[in-house]
Length: 447
Image (cartoon, rainbow, N blue to C red; front, top):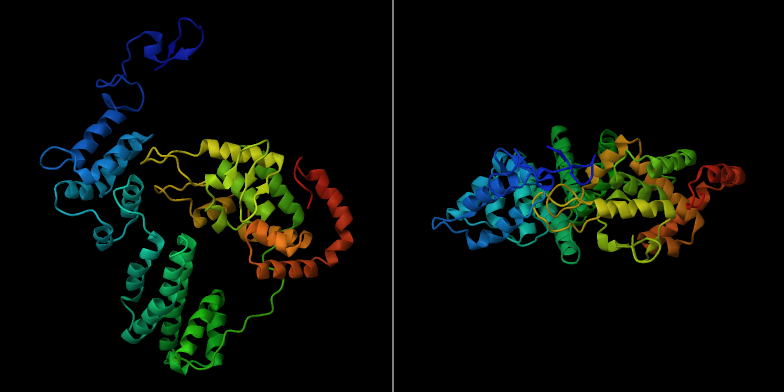
């Protein structure tokens, strides 16, 4: 309820500032914020969290002290109360407080996996109750067992050997140097799922892996057109161990990417993202990073605040080895994005991610960001391909590699492909440049 300020007519203030009693003030602390029955949500949460995490002696269990501090520091206490009321997190925490179970990664691994239990694990990691660990990697093993649970023994044996001796071994080696991303874990699952599907397909035809012929493989690739890469990796591993004959997945000659975007459409999307304020700022920035700098969504979501330098008049973003100075229209959006990054529902510590996700301590997932951008009419794959080919056509491959993080070989291949595919385009280049320049926002280079 708002009151009129006595010293500033027309200005509305709270009851305390107006010197009036408030009918909605918390009966415990007097606050008018976070109204929750006769008290505020902050006081209710403090009482319930303390009771929840206290042992038989009435004191909060030492291991759960960090969890209590994190719960009491949230910015949205009503959301946290709802989380405790609707998930089994409260049951698990209460069992730990009473000494019935320890709270460890191993205990959580033994429970059936649900989204809410994953949320609880992330919260306990952010709070400092549990140690950090590469979660996407650790979740692969339970997923593999579920995948193979109903498979014939001989098929499960081959897929499990492929997983342990090749796929998971490579993931484990990578995890020793850099954190495993959700996308990398998804690719590993794709490799294993396709291997299992191929073996099941052969079994339905009365065949096995040892009897796979080239004609059979070609038929499999026709029926599963998106499985070429995963199938190639699996069969390369199987050939090296003499589990199959000399069958190979032949790749077509590399040409222009199948999904491309018209240049006028590209610049129209750039202008929309720059000027349509009803679009969420994180979507505007992410879309512009992809459209202008050819950054894939898998890399965009991993950007941190430390990758952005706000010192000086301009804004620089470190996409790879070299920081890129952003054009003027984009700098304001990046500053706004950093200023608007919300606090977590479960911890008052500022998030490090430039694009924070809903789970505590996690960045926005690639699939979520991609879905939201496509809902705006931005075809993410086509946008990435078009921006990458345009950059490759106008700068030396070493600079391209250093600027956006491509390998030298990949950058050189993009450069050769761009020069070849854009040869016919140069005939109309001058007319198109004049057209695009007239529509390009100030501060952005023409195509």
